[in-house]
Length: 231
Image (cartoon, rainbow, N blue to C red; front, top):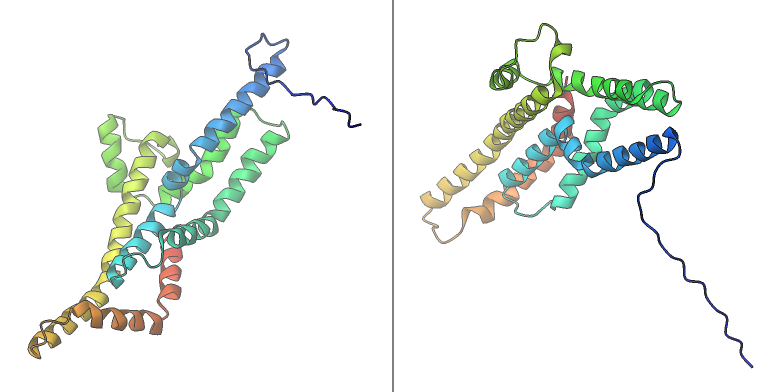
């Protein structure tokens, strides 16, 4: 005879109760802060690091070669992410050693944590932001001219850094376009002079551009130049 065993079904209770001590409130605020940081982490990666310049240059390179979906977006984004971690490693380590580690050891408070973590990122952005772009946002916000770099607020620095990164990425992309554009012009001119009008120039120029990129070890040169472009 088979006996039936009752299975206890767990219940889930969600509610708001009065905290019995200040430590419970502190833990709740820490969890809330952590969830907030995780939710905006992708935006922070785009705004505060080298990712913007890298992914824009890789996208321009793909269009310059005449490739629509090769390499795929997943490959380009992954490459840009790993290069971002490589470039930003000193900044991440400094933020961890000076801010996160002391906070986890309960040596500093939340305010000091934010100041110490943001300081390395602020220094990185200042080194890669044009004075003209920074002056633009200072003027738009109506702020007085900062006496020292430390006086620049993050709300002013972040958008200035982003448009500086976009301008630099477009400058690099323009230089990438020139040799491939010359190949397109030469192939088109040769086909027209030979009277071959039914053959799309892209069918001949694409293999030539790929061959040129491989022969000069394009990925090696491009990645080296991108990493060296950051101060």
